[in-house]
Length: 73
Image (cartoon, rainbow, N blue to C red; front, side):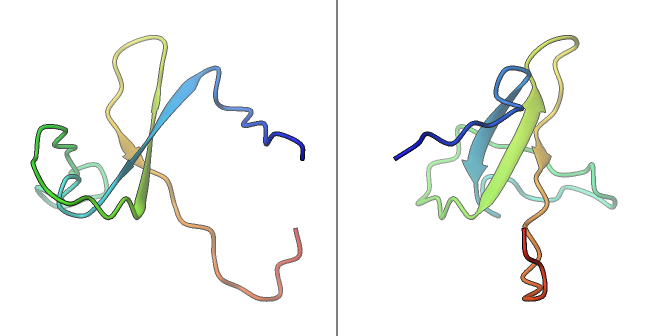
């Protein structure tokens, strides 16, 4: 089999999380905070992403792929 290449892997890092360790702490889409030290059974159903270089960036939730059956890609 062939390896899957992620074009963002050289510039971004990814992390799996859940609603317990990545909760919303206010209004707006940028009010989520990652809690890496939370002891829990993580469902890992949320994908987070942040830039590797430059100013330390916050973890951002990656939007899920739409389940639209007409999409052929």
